[in-house]
Image (cartoon, rainbow, N blue to C red; front, side):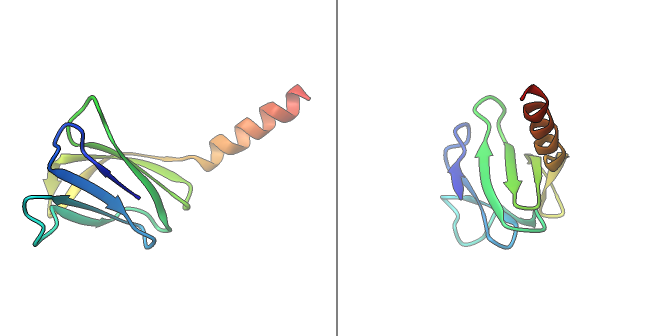
Amino acid sequence: MGTWDPLAPNNFYFTTEDGLLIGYDARKTDHALFSIKAHGKVATTVSASYGVQGLLATASHDGTVKIWDTMTINHGEPLLLIEKNMKAVKLIIAYLIYREN
């Protein structure tokens, strides 16, 4: 899955089946802006913020959603701002649906 950055239109990001998050500047495709092992399983999606430049969200089959700051690069990697395990949310929703029935 991939996306262009609406606030930095030359940048695009994509995720891979081995959990990588990779960012490129379309003007300099000879090397990536960054490449990081973002997830332990298939990284299924990446989404760029329309309100905050450099803010990305990724999701994975490992059950996590992660928020990244690509404006802060340390040792070639964007800053991980937050990680949330969404498996618990699925259990809570299932319980609430069951309880209502």
